[in-house]
Length: 227
Image (cartoon, rainbow, N blue to C red; front, side, top):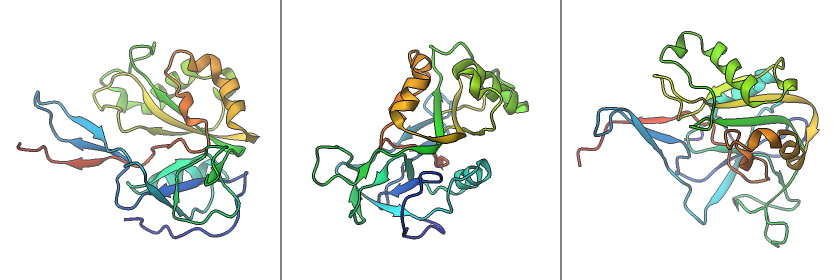
């Protein structure tokens, strides 16, 4: 289920650092059924059982946008990204613990040069994608980016991943935007930087701590239940 990923070895590089964690046999992506009772597609996300233990998976790195794009195509359904760094002396499998006061914490805050922004549009978003948005997804991704992020992101290189909740028939934007920054930044810096854009609850501020899951795996599909 983990594809070509293997148990990771070695240290943590803030320029490329990313942790991919996988609880055993627990999908972390949204499960889409073909139809709901009213005939429309719908989905649900399978949550991680608590407490859960996680394995670390090896990556080639996230040193540039090409590497990020390649990674997004390969993340298995039972894996997620986090921003944190491994606490010295920690061995896998581990619990996803980052409490600074905990004696058994596994992850600590660390600066990262890569940045994921989660735009989760709803009624608070001034933008809604039209029904034909798939004819020009790049245009509509740029529209949402420019509406919800500060000027310095508008002309930057970006990897766009439409999240599991983005519907083919249009609607409010639901996207993951990946950027490579000019230097590694701490989570508190990101919150300060993007704070005004998080106020509307469209840009998700919860990503910016050591162990918050970044759900980036492709969705799973199933036939509807007959019960």
